Length: 107
Image 1 (cartoon, rainbow, N blue to C red):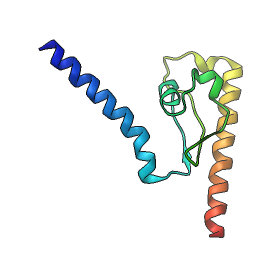
Image 2 (image 1 turned 180 degrees about the horizontal axis):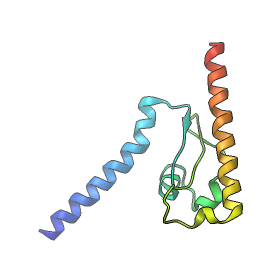
Image 3 (image 1 turned 135 degrees about the vertical axis):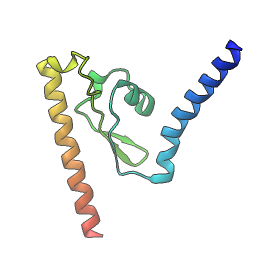
Image 4 (image 1 turned 90 degrees about the vertical axis):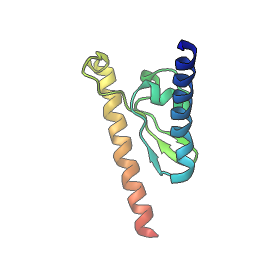
């Protein structure tokens, strides 16, 4: 019984993770904002939030701009350098949204 439960959990996790990456081929997003370290690792193969927040990555033709998880339990945002990374990421998201809007307006 325990083995069957473990298999179902693994299958569920596998389908959830493949669905997250597989769905981008159906939707073709122009901007992806992975939130948290797990999302950044799964989507972009990055090792830590600290190394990726505040940077823009290309992912299958879309801009990917990772953000930290907004959990209040995390002390990550207590570090001024990390707050600066989040501010840089927010600027990148705003710039990317503006670029997408300009591109669509131009047709």
